[in-house]
Amino acid sequence: MMAGAAMLTACQSTLQKTTITGILEGVESDTLVTLIYPVTKEGRTVRDTIALQNGKFTIEVTNDTIPSYVNILPKPVGNKAVNMSEFIQILAIPGQPLTVTGTINNHQITGNEFYTKYNEAQKEWKDLEDKINQMSQIAVEMEQQGIPGDSVRKYYAPVRDMIAQTVDKRAEYIRQHPDEDVSLYLATRTGNRFEEVFPLLTDKVKNGPLAALYRTMDKGLKEQKAREEARAKIVEGAEAPDFTLKDLNGQDLALSSLRGKYVVLDFWGSWCGWCIKGIPDMKKYYEKYKDRMEILGIDCRDTEEKWKAAVEKYELPWLHVRNEGNPDVSLLYGIQGYPTKIVVDPEGKIAKIVVGEDPAFYEYLDKLFK
Image 1 (tube, rainbow, N blue to C red):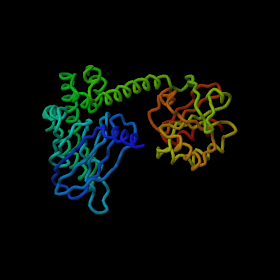
Image 2: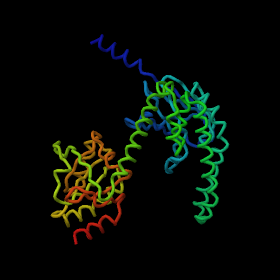
Image 3: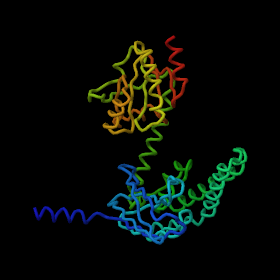
Image 4: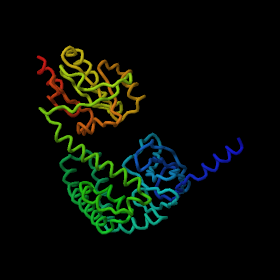
């Protein structure tokens, strides 16, 4: 037992950490809120509170081999809600300590080669970013003061051009420095130019300390392209792609097995507010037309436990399957938003596509089955 305990201790001591220390000015609270999550976005977000003493703080991030994003927000004084638009985001690379100085809205991060290069690169567009932040804050204040929306929009209009200029400057940096880790990070902030600059990154970046971030972005880009290709094929009148997923009892259920009646493919999730809001109408129309149609709920982005709990909680009487990702039916059907309802006719053709909780869906059913 002693040997086993020693081995466990040894294994635990090898876990890499990122220590973040800092001195922040202008924070009323004596507490900071931290949100920490891996760059792969796989796994849970760890929320914690950190003491802020005379502006000083220390954060210990256990990130071992996968870099993490660390968001730092001041905890509001009194009963105010946390302002999620004002925060410091840090890219924490395992084993590389960092220091933060300045204010929430105007700060500098130092301590490793990545941030040395990032700070140098940022000089090209920092003035623009500062102006964007300043004008955005003023626009919010104008709205709070009840200034007419047209006036607010007119004031804010130049910001769009500033954002485009900032994106152009980041893209140009990536083009000139394709073998730097900073370029990979900047690629996440290039908007509609992402597909243009991401392929420029070299093997040095792909296999460097941010390799996990590269793989995540590469996977996302491939899925986006596959979704766009699928969406082009998912049109009214086209054949509905067949698929087989597990139902609530763990049994295979194929779309083709429902051939012969109208089937509503309902892409939803327990996390989707509009999906939940639409349940009463869905239940009403299921009861109204269940002799002529079937609803197949396709749960997406849920754990098995949350999926089954939601079906039970809301007493959903129709058929259910869970999209676990193999195959990824949401990708197969090019789903862009939730809920999405796709009506398949008795011959297996797509008859109607409705994105969002839209009365047009129920109007369509009434017209179809009148």
